[in-house]
Image 1 (cartoon, one colour):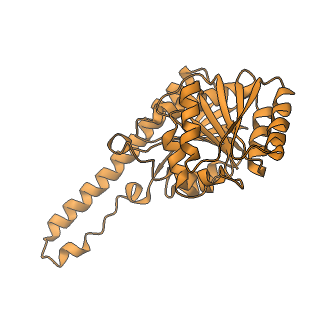
Image 2 (cartoon, rainbow, N blue to C red; image 1 turned 120 degrees about the vertical axis):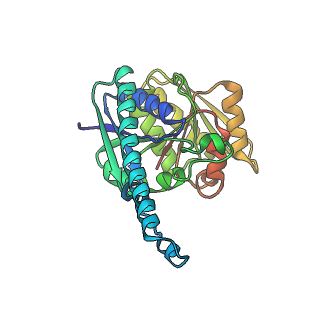
Length: 286
């Protein structure tokens, strides 16, 4: 497999959506999909420190039984991971992706992602992890870690996949925003997607200039575009999420780093505020 989309799957309700978004990216770009499931070291090794119980007078037989149960749990977690990967592979194959691989890793998630993303085109990950249904107001604990560590485009999948026909591209004139525009221009994924270029800030000649430049670049490859400027706000994530909801966009695209109000959406606590507020997938580019 040469170019591929890395799909990070777990036992959460977002796993199916991650597969569907990965399949969409793969079919649109001609890439394959590599499904990756990572078991933490404790899950993989099945080791639990029970030594403190000895001081409480626990019997040796009880400690041995607890250790055996812990080892059994680790084996079950490994088998569950294999089943999850196989179910995900079948889902992606059913979506029409011919080239699919699976990988079960033991250890640290970021180390596994760093290894897997070499030669990868992009990474897909769910908005929330296995505890999503019990913490609907929170994002997955590993999401920000992956966003900050990965050097590939990261697609944060929403709860359910829907066809991508309209995308909102947040632009602040920064380097990563320009890279986002270039990515959209070069990717076959967006050939049939209409794009609105939007910025948050003051209406100036400079602002109009970079929006016009981006619009010209996308129009040059046949992508229908329009521009919009939202007034500077203390909560730009709310304004963007509102535009997405009101105008029926299917995806938000933005650079991961910038130098204006949009920068605050990615650096710091408002990162989670934006992704949490949006009900559509978010594609982030460094």
